[in-house]
Structure formats: structure tokens, C-alpha cells
Amino acid sequence: MSRQQPRVPRDRDLDVSIAVVSYNTRELLAGCLNSIHETAAGLSFEIIVVDNASSDGSPEMVARDFPEAGLIRNAENLGFAAATNQAIRISRGRYILLLNSDALLLPGTVRKMVSFMNDHPKAAIVGGQLLNPDGSFQGSYADFPDLFGELLLITKLAHVVYTRTYPSHPAAESQRERAVDWVFGACLMARRDAVKAVGLLDEEYFMYTEEADWCYRMRQSGRLVYYLPSASVIHWGGQSARKVPERKRSELYRSKWLFMRKHRGRVTASAFRIAVLILSSLKLTGWALTCLSPDAARRGRGLQNVRSYALLLSKF
Image 1: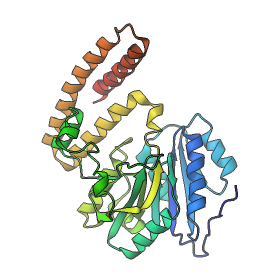
Image 2 (image 1 turned 90 degrees about the vertical axis):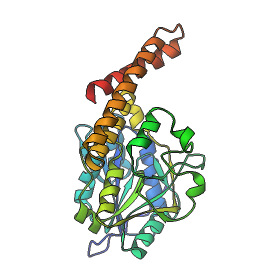
Image 3 (image 1 turned 30 degrees about the horizontal axis):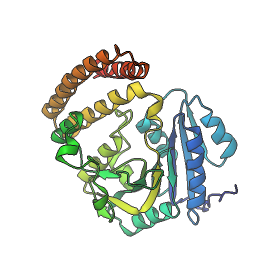
Image 4 (image 1 turned 120 degrees about the vertical axis):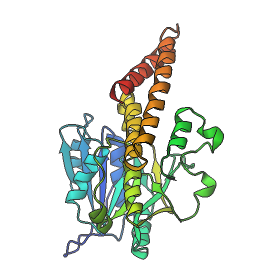
């Protein structure tokens, strides 16, 4: 397949730098990188892939099949925020597009996001509309986390009190351009000047919630965050996290606790932590009983969840 070569102007003022963090998603990563070349025609851009110590041949594939892309090979998994910051530090574009390795850009998406940023100088960040592989709705933006909402999520009551898509806004509210609290990092474009003023992603977050934190800081600085539904992206979702299923839950709750501690106060963060510890202890007990089941599949699922909750309780 022939690919458009990035147009690099003499003054090195690129339209956009596209940062892709990779962790054991080789085939999806190849599709992601191909989609950039197929959909970014007419823009000057660079691609920077940061590989977080993949063991599936991802960095070798990038070096072989996408030699035009910058490639950073980490000796260990540094997490999403730290790896993205590595790309941002060496990037040159006026805008920086954070793109998940399990995402496929649809035609015109990058151009639409660049045009939007050009036309909205107060916008620090714009996010695209995420779609499931079958083209169905996937949440793309949300309100900032708070204690009440997070308690509803961990008790599984959020979909009773709110909608089944919570904390994402539902499909009916996701068809128009709008200013929002935060957009999901699977396809997020940031203005370089805003990044210089507000700072990079907070590397205390290993994965999850780092983009909510970034958007919060942008909003606190008086800048705006937008959702742009005309910029569409196919997103498989959570593919890297599936490689470390037992760590996923602990990192998710830890990231929410970090956000609470930073932006909601220590009392709120402590209340969230206590709630997580109590509920996780109860769930650990329940899954431990499942390990006694005569059904092998149930025992396997129970063992995985026991390990997950045990890790959460030991780390949280």
C-alpha cells in the first residue's frame, strides 16, 4: 500500500505532531499508522511512536514498515502519561495529537481538528468522536470526576441513577460540537502554546484519568476544551490494558484517587479511598468463593479477579 509522505516545510513549523504510545498492540498499531497516512493528506505532520517495552515485535514492525516515523523504545513500561510526554518533548508541530494505538482515523479527521483549532484560538484541547469497530456509539467526553459519581460507579448504581453510558454523555447529546469538561485521550489534540503554559501530562498517573487531569488544568487556566463529533475515530478500546488485566483495576482506582486528591481535596480523596477499600474487600471475598466452583471457567475468572482485587488492596 502506498502512503503519503509527510510534507515538512522548510521552516520546520509542522501543522501537527502525532504521538502514538504502544504496548503489545502490533497489528492494531500498524492499522493506526496506516490510517494517519491515508487521512492526513494536505497537512504537514510527523509521527512519533513511543513503545513501552512491547514483547510482540511492535517496535521492530514500526522500524521496518514505517521508517518515516520517529521511534522511542523504552526498556520498561513507563505508562501512558510518561511515554506521551517523551513524544511531546521532541515534537515540533503547532498542535499535538494524542492517538491510541488501537484507534483508526477516519477520512478528514486530522484536517477537521486542525481547522477547528485554527478557527478557535481559545481552544486548548479538542477531542474527536470515538466509535466502536461496528460504527456504533462509544463515549467520547465526560464531566470531571466527583465523589458522588465515582461512588455510584464502584457500587454499580450509576446506570440506574444516570444513563447506561455514564460517565460518558449519551449518544443523543454527542452529535453536536460543544465545550466540555474533558475529552478522552484516544484522540485528543492539544495546542502547543497551551501545553507550554499549563505543562505536560502528570506522570503520577500510570494510565487512566491523565487526560481528565490535563483538561482540568487547561480549564483552570481559563482555556477551553471542545468535543468535535465530525472528527471520527474507530476505537477498539482498552487493548493495551488487556495485556495486564490484573493491574487494570488498581491503576484505574489509583488514578481516580489521584484526581480527587489534586482537585477535590484530601477529605474527598480519603472518603473515596475508604469506599474503594471496603467494597474491594467484599468483592475479593465473593470472588474467592467463586474459586470453589466446580466449573473451570468460573474458577479461572474467580482467580483472576482475586488476584486483581488483592493487588488493588495491596497498592491502594
